[in-house]
Amino acid sequence: MSKIKGHVYKEIKPGKKRGKTFLAKTVFWFLGRGAQATAKYDSNAKAEVYSWEDGMTILLKVESNGPVMAIGKRKGKLLYLGSKEITADITIYFKNIEAALLVLTGRIGIAQAFAEHRFTLKGDIAEGMSVVRCLTTVEAYLFPKFITKKIIKRMPKKECSSFKVYTATLFGIK
Amino acid sequence: MIPSYYEFLNSVKILSGVKALENMPFELKNLGAKRPIVLTNDMLVKFGLVDIVLNAFKESDITIGAVFVDIPADSSIKVVNEIAEVYRKNNCDSIIAIGGGSVIDTSKGLGIVISEDTEDIMKYMGSEIIHKRKMPFVVVPTTSGTGSEATLVAVIANPDKNVKMEFISYNLLPDVAVLDPRMTISLPPRMTASTGMDALVHAIEAYTCMQKNPLSDVYAFASIKLITEYLPKAVGNGKDQDARLAMANASLMAGAAFSNSMVGLVHAIGHACGGVCHVPHGDAMTILLPHCMEYNMDEMGELYGELLLPLAGADLYSSTPREERPAKALEVVKEMIDKYNKQCGLPKTLSECGVKKEDLGRIGKTAINDGAIIVNPKEADYNDVLTILEKAL
Image 1 (cartoon, chains in turn orange, blue):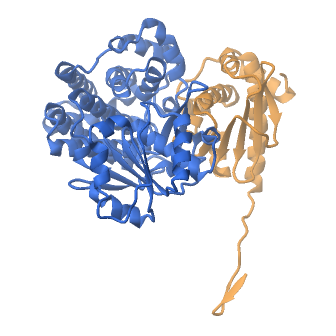
Image 2 (image 1 turned 135 degrees about the horizontal axis):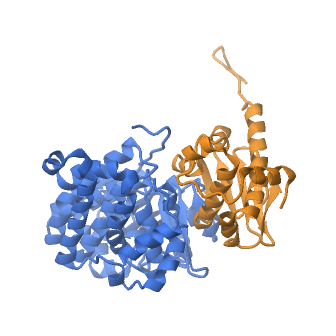
Image 3 (image 1 turned 30 degrees about the vertical axis):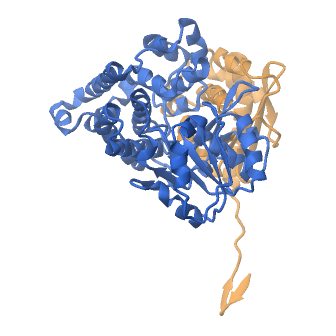
């Protein structure tokens, strides 16, 4: 705080958006475990994961100190690695919680989010494209049709029911 | 229609026209520079273009710290690190790039290495993760062109891992771009046509991709208008300074457009053709443009139809019924390519560039992992890309 010529200037620390942060954390949990489940049952997601090097780690994070989601290929499988920040080969940083929620709540797709500069990407962009395709397949299973038809350019053919993927998501089936 | 959200930045100061080069010392002084490193390649030294630039510093306060001429046709991380050592040892404080895409990208890589004080540029691969540039950066393009003098992208090869690393950041934009007709006057007709078509594809894709916005549209539209008017003149008479300057402007505008709007399917497949089969970039753009337009027609036809105006002029545009304009625009593009094919041997098929049927699989796999494909409004998977490649073969 400072006082100059009779005016008092107080600092303003950044506030919190607890509700939105909790929502993002929750969706990240579903997305991570959903990716794990989708890669088990869907051959297109499986093919993308197959093309990655074993040990590859992908992190999604909301700047500046927001929620985190990590997934990675371990011994041939795509696994949800939790909600703590770890060193990653590909990191997608959503610029703020609002940008993250636009994607996580299905208002815009990942391609549109990229076009709108809603996130930055650290790592090899070519590898990033495979990750985006994999996550798009996950979205196809996790989001209802009325959302996916707006946000996905071409709906991939689902190879099992979303119910099966959701069950695997909830029970953490790998 | 205004997009729900977009970002636009073109912070490059543009000097265009007669004796533009001679204003460089003034601009460098404004930017606080005293000892620039000049980056170029030996062909441009042989053509005398580098001397023209260096002579522009006579009677100024600027001392050239060093001149590096060994930049290869494809930018590489090894060359970037070599130049960084020269930069540091000669106490340089700014960069002047004289050349085409490879020289400019190498210069952008140098900017990353020096600003981040690193020897491992791979740590900065990605999109919008480079947060600073410490030194003034001036570009003198010698082709028209890649438009790299106005873009936020650099592509640099890692020869050890046989990959091309992509860097996207607003901090890669130069401070100044100098468009002087003397720099492109000696470009042969075939190269003029090829680089001119590259600029055309930049503008067309910038106008039609997902990231398009009202400001990038203006640049793209104006660029196409200049290209259709002046590229034939520049190809027909290389000494036409007005045509050369117009093409330099068109190329920069197309660069500014796609820097803020990205490119799409033509570039995704074209980059892959270059990476796998070393097809020259401008040639790949020329060959692939009509095929990708045909593929995209059902999603982007209306936008192609709007481009008939700058492509063919007001008379043809107004006399063509609205629903026929997309097909007409494609026809005009094909006629343009045919003309340059007859005039200066610009290729029309990938096989003319040495691509074989057995290469198409590898090209397809590379193309679907190119960042540009994500912003093509129409989805294109491996099979779609393969179909396009087969038609283009």
